Image (cartoon, rainbow, N blue to C red; front, side):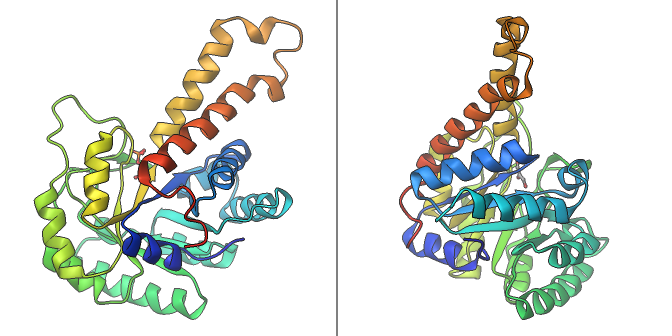
Length: 290
Ligand code: 13P
């Protein structure tokens, strides 16, 4: 069932658990992530960046793949299809393409006022169509889809100003970065998270850069108000490692091991297993009907 992400994240906020928001790159990715969520009866946010949509041709293709998979696989758990790190223009494209949820990442706009103004406009339009909205304050470090920013601690007052616009969930930098964490990473700032939570009340907060954060830090962040944990690189690494193993063992050269259905299967299975582990760590197993 395709839904927006509001109710599932509000339930997570009340129930003190987190929902994984897993990035999809293609049919195998989407199918594997859906299988994991269905098996563990977890609500699911499946998300796509502009770059990954371009790879798959368009946002409409992504929306059609996910919708058709949900129907054809008889997926019973609630699934939100979310735009990850959308530009102002991409938000409108995704609303037209049939996404049920969008992130407008205004943290790269020239001024905070422009972020505010555009977020407000998007909230009005999206809500008139039943679509949920994530906004962002404070750039997330690392490189996401070619956009780089230094790790930041979001300004709590700016978070409150954006929250007051009626966004459904809010991404705020608390020292997290995209991609693999460097050895000298300082860890998450729980003090800053607590300050933001104190000003934003029961608004579900979002942690980007979910790959490689120690589980105890993720779980502490969830206990302090993080409800959505974005994961992309982690599943890419799982897919790559399983595919590498298959090829290094020479299996692609045995019989018809080169057949894409055989060649991609270990990576596909690895995505299912890793997604299941993450769902369990975040605590959303069995929460599909909360
Ligand atoms: P990672 O690639 O570090 O898991 O980050 C994903 C993310 O935050 C997507 O918005």
